[in-house]
Amino acid sequence: MTAPLDVDALVAEASAALASAGTTDEVRQVTTAALGKRSPLVAAHRSLGGLDPDERRALGRRLDDARRTLEAIADDRRRALEAAELEAALLAERLDLGEELPDRARSPLSRGALHLVTTTRDALEDTFVGMGFEVVEGPEVETDWYNFGALNIPPAHPARGMWDTFYLAVGEPETVLLRAHTSPVQVRLMEAAVAAGMSPIHAVMPGRCYRRDTPDARHLPVFHQVEGLVVDEGITFADLAGTIETFTTAYFGPEIHSRLRPAFFPFTEPSAEFEITCTLCRGTGCRTCSGTGWIELGGCGMVDPAVFDAVGIDGERWTGFAFGFGIDRCAQMRHQIADMRSLVENDVRFLRQF
Image (cartoon, rainbow, N blue to C red; front, side, top):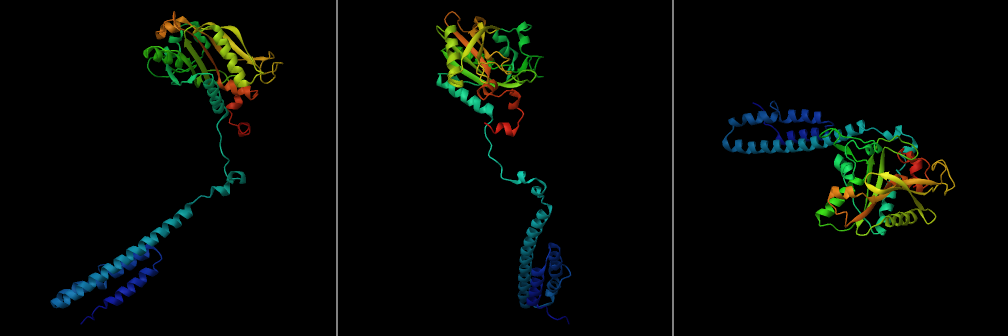
């Protein structure tokens, strides 16, 4: 006759084995031995049919309680070991990059700062806002009409040779482009003013522009520009000259002045280039200003009547002027930077100065 199963001893022995298991595989082996198909617990379940009903019920409850107890202990031990094994695996696979890097790279990171071009743009906006202008922005991807057509530069016009343009493979050939200047924003602004019933415009338009220029000391293929537009009744060329001089002294200081020289731009008539006293040599002549003592900052002029016609403004009632110049050039002049390419070379030694 088979000896009766000592359920308490079985639970105690299996519990001790689970507690001492060092891996999840050991937990699985102990669980199989205590609760598997060939375990004493299963064998005792199979023998219940030979007992009288009262004994069967009592032993059955004890066997079920024993199974639930061991399953709970096994689950807890398995979860604890799985967490420990995962942590050990992560530690084993961790790469200590600091051991491969020089001491300088492992040192605390220094705090970053805004780029010189960004701070220059902010300062220019503040200057013009102080002069009564509002700041307006527009898209960098434009249509041929906004970049050229509305500005009195129709297709095949020789003036298009002034801008070596980046065209995009969108739509019809040479109809979508990266704007060559921020003048398209002026067109959009005038259109909006006409749609709203026309009111005076006093605005500046800063932004990024693109031309296929060869980088040199004073030019970059991707550059930043700010343009101004004033449209009102009774505006004259004298207002333009006064605005340029007011800006120059306000931004660069009272020792720096501006001068206008006749020029040609399709969208202004009359047109002028404006120069400022070279801030590097203070007018005595240097390599950056080609020995003239002056350096070109941008172009300006009275808005051409053809531009007013293109946007629907009555040129008999309204007159205006426009100007534009490079933000990068302003940064170069204000901080006496000999070569504009320094702005895009990302040399930390240079950038830390500002």
